[in-house]
Amino acid sequence: MRLVQIFGFHCLLETLKQLEQPLIDYFRSEGLEKKPAIDTMAMTWANLVRDGVGVIFAIVNEDNACGILMGILSPDMLTAKRAALEVFWFVKPECRAYSLDLLREFEQYAKSVGCERVVAGSQFTRLKAMHRMYRQNGYRPFGEVFEKEL
Image 1 (tube, rainbow, N blue to C red):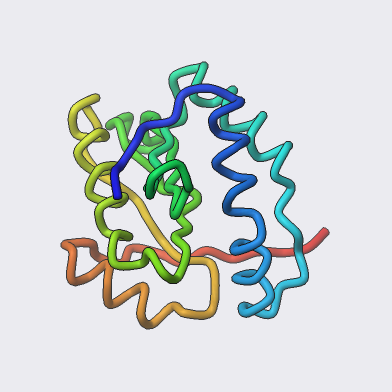
Image 2: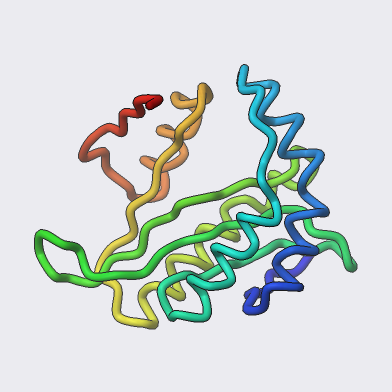
């Protein structure tokens, strides 16, 4: 297993396509019938990376993607201090032993480009396990996220 940073659209698209079925399976296990919009996701994130706002890391086993973490780097609008926001983090079940490697790589990268903090969270039902993992790795809760369908 190795960690790579992804920069281009085609590389990102290929990585996401390799993760598409495991993502669909995961969404279903969470009670979501949503299908990931892989092409839109790749185009949006490739643009964020190109513009210097997004950063993407992947876990690769040989030439197969096992996991991905995508984040945004920007000044906090309340404090103006640069922060890194983990937006999307998925690792195939058989590769979950390497999940924290992605988070740590993201943290190190964020620090190297001047971010003073990382904001991360979970949007699905395995909240207790995710919250425990975040706390064990130095994170503290500071709010909640809510969603409303329009």
